[in-house]
Amino acid sequence: MPRYMILVRATPMSEAGDFPDDPTLVPRMVAFHEEMAKAGVLLDGAGLQPSSQGFRVQYDASGRANVLNGPFAETKELIAGYTLIEVRSHDEALAWAQRFPAPFPGQPCCIEVRPLLGGVDLPAEDGERIIREQLAAIKRGG
Figure (cartoon, helix red, strand yellow):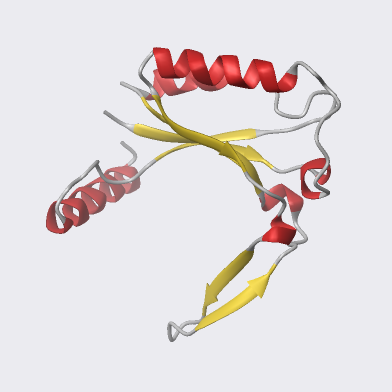
């Protein structure tokens, strides 16, 4: 079955390390994740600390690694949390995403949903073949 990652985009509030002033938020998120678990679609999920607590490893064209410590400036490019689900279809992933509780009540926010490449627990040679087939299908438009 396909796996999808629901990415909760960061906001200036989440990057400042502030928590929304809404006492119903955590209970709503917990209830929603429990519902997904009972439906058998939830694989994992968590909030992330602000980017000031993280780092990036950037590679140049020769493959040399350079470590950059946070915080990172472009909030719209950052992730504040994620939920990983396994569902039967794109439509089912969309249905769950549309019911996702607003992560930052009272302010604009965005979640992004993307399918994962590959399969679960595949030998390396099968995993590479499947990823290449998936990418080729995307390029063909299907």
